[in-house]
Amino acid sequence: MAADSEFTIDELARAADTTVRSVRVYHERGLLPSPEVRGRIGYYGSDHLDRLQTISRLLGRGMKLNGIRELLEAWDRGDGLAEVLGVKEANGTGPESEATTEHDDDYAELPEYAKQALAASEDPLEAYRVTNPRCCDLATRLNDTGLPVQDTFHLVERLRADCDRIADRFATELFYRLAGQAYEESPRTPRDRTKLETDLAIARLIVTRAASELIDQAFARHSELPPPTLPSPSPLSGVPTVPSPPVPGPQPAVDR
Image (cartoon, rainbow, N blue to C red):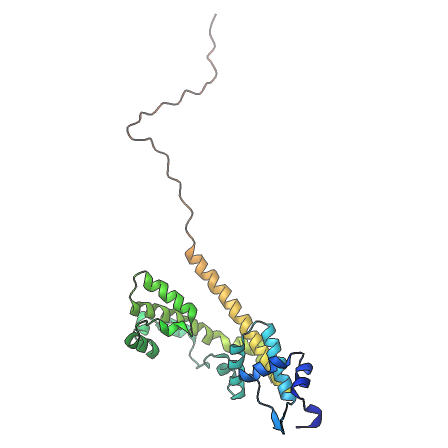
């Protein structure tokens, strides 16, 4: 490391406007690479500083440490944009053509993890509990209504499959526009790469929130009750009706 890019842990924390304790936590959680140790002192470089600043920006935008670690690990492995963001590469088949050929038979086979859960666990819905807690809540409530567990899995997995198709259709273009395009036009220095990491994470948050809002509005339209209709008035059975009094009008002239 060059002398002008070396930091002790105290110097690194000050440069990144954070605390020594936070630096240690990030290292323990796998977000920050190990320093170069000489003697009994660890020395950090500019890459560590860039990474710390990226972590701080992502934390400030609402990301959790586990999510940041997954993002950084994928980037460090050299994964492409789609792998970093957890979406599939476009395969050249149009979503419109897929939609025209889809039937419920496409979901006849459950994924392997669901089959294993049904076969091996006293609580099959445990398969959702850790990785998809909200799916677990939905599945539990469906099961509580009397829907068999296997049918519950089918229904939740159909929902998951449709969400995957939405991501496959739009993710590449949205993330490229929001983050990848600027990086392609940059000199692609380490600082540009650090900026791309931040831009990708921000884009993921923005797109996810927008999609959640649209899905919420779509489900809201289907949950609206029609306005109540007022019953037409009718005479009560067995109760005689009272005729309305005549409306007074002009009296005829009387000859005197």
